[in-house]
Image (cartoon, rainbow, N blue to C red; front, side, top):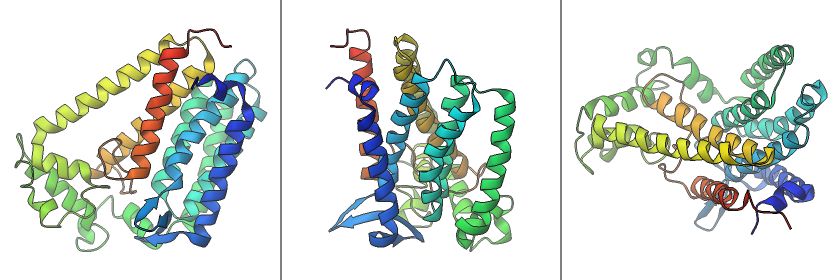
Length: 307
């Protein structure tokens, strides 16, 4: 399948966009609450998280929108329209409430908008709007436990057995790995269940406990190679849609990587973001592999003539 039908057939992307909005909306009717968040559909023993596919759909939609208007992107109305596109799913995700995914949506829009040529005064206007949205989210969207996670970020030892527990245990796991780690399967924090969600939200802490600093550096090196390959493909493509897609897709991976590692080592609040390609979770892995597939398709077909 040639990826360029996504660039030429707008109705396909709009159809996917509205499908994601429907899925995110119906979560509140048919979704099951897990750890205080309504983010999953359960079909038997299979769980599906629509926001993960939604991230990829938003990359494609924004790449399509900005690529067709890159010459006149300085006009404020294009930023407003693209902002509305991202704002609707962002608000639906906040209501779940899933602060981590909302941050990823916002990071994606900022990356593509800035790269496309946003004006300084428009950027300032955006910051003001973001402040208003943040105040709204804090007062009406975030659950009490999420507020505690954010406020406990500055001093987790103020409530070591409550709001600060996860952050403290994650830092203990990272530090106890030392240089070479404890060995695979010998991480006491994860294997004895001191570290919560060791296979998802705190996979980096569990990995570093078992593999140590050397393993963490190898993991960083793997992501560095991945980013380098994505950027290289983006620099060699011949159209703006492909270039913006590679930028948007890499921004999703990079923002999730930064947030996940940051919250595992105590530099950022805990928001429940998984580590791309490493954390357990089918929806995340499937959407990322689809994204890589589109990227490979761009690499193969970008310089061929479109039939």
